[in-house]
Length: 87
Image (cartoon, rainbow, N blue to C red; front, side, top):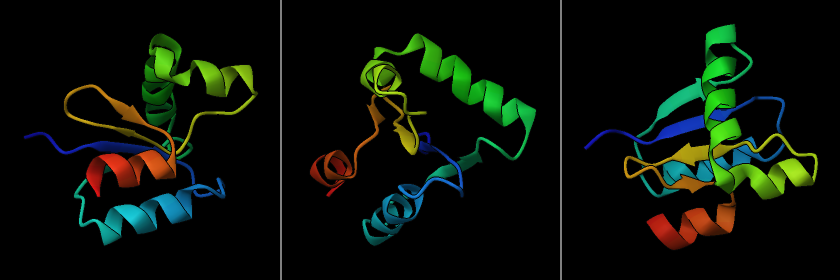
């Protein structure tokens, strides 16, 4: 199985608790800091701009991170969803 991909930014206050929960659940994942490189930023934007999971975040003026992309294509944006689906 392919590891989930976590899109995040260290500046985002929601990243730390999300990562803490992933670690508590012992989820192995690929880390993609979207502000580390232009390639990472473009990779995230391509996902964000083509997946409807991000519609509500965009409508409310949010970036949509942290975002965990699962191997099956499902995207988790909320900490409570992370706990429900992976806990």
